[in-house]
Amino acid sequence: MDKSLSLVHVKLLAFDLLSLAQSPPDTPTFSRDGVSLSRAEVLGVVVYREHKPGRFLKFAVDDGTGCVPCVLWLNHATSPYFARQRPQGVRLIADVANSQASLVKLGVVTRVRGRITSYWGAVQITASSVAVERDPNAEVLHWLDCLKLARRVYDRPGS
Image (cartoon, rainbow, N blue to C red):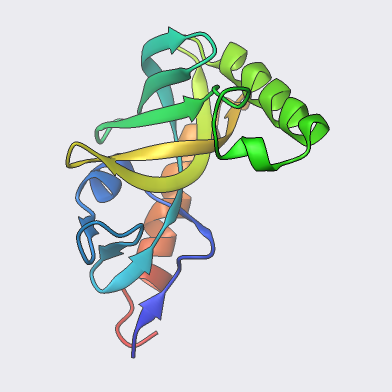
């Protein structure tokens, strides 16, 4: 039985995310112990930030188990992908992305949700949502959620 969690944002710690295998290579699906994944959620401190206005924001989130590279695309006005969509919708998406990019600052605890992708053979998250966490317990709660989900859902044979 093929197990798949590809339609949900799976909560993962960095060491789990960075150890994912692309299955098969050159596809948008990754595998963790036979479970298909395509979306993830990570939470940690922003430790690296590279902003290219109008193009992208590249940043890294450290959760204590490793650093997850993330990219938030800001090229909505020039991307051929968005050329087929309504200009008002593209402007709205671009405004949201720029607003989220302004929240990403060094040392800030950030929750990132998005697609698991590979760039030059390295796993990264292509962000669809970036939020600053204000709850001081958010990191610990994320760790506990990840451990509980790993034990009860991700690592269960045959489920």
